[in-house]
Image (cartoon, rainbow, N blue to C red):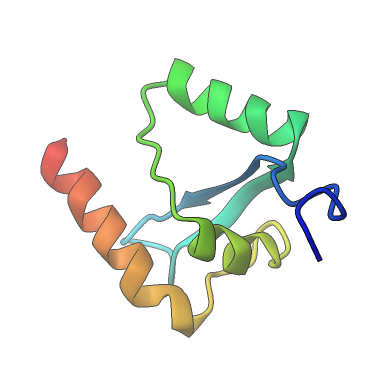
Length: 90
């Protein structure tokens, strides 16, 4: 199927994560969306100085989760690498 036949193929997606190492068992999804909702999530993150990382595969995995769900074990390494990079920059 071509991207023209798949109307959502190029739609922007965003997933916001939160993690408090003192109280959370793992990072969790705090917001997610597609299209204009995703664009608004990104806009709010940028306005608040929150680091944005793009990873289409990881976004696909995480966007399948419900809000307030912890990330699946399969995503731990990828998310840990991103969080490590962000914490080092801070």
